[in-house]
Image: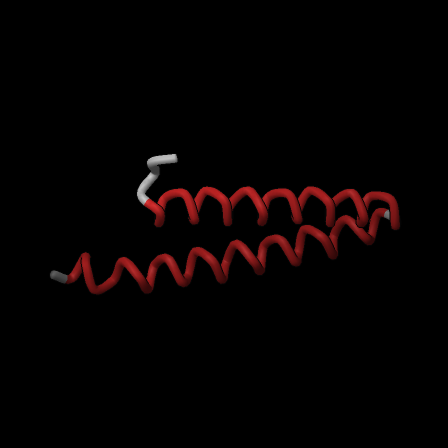
Amino acid sequence: MIKRLLAPIWRFFDVIFFTISMVFINIFAFYWGNRWGFLSLAITSFLVARASEILAYQMKGGDD
């Protein structure tokens, strides 16, 4: 019962910390220069898009 109650909360924290870590990675990359910062933004955008596709696939049921 407790596991079912805490599962959505853990997912929420995972998303929050994933977002915070991506923000700090991008800030750190911009300290190295604009080129590294924009490369970091591109990689971050790719990772967010990929994560949302995986999440949508799992919520759909995985039969595609």
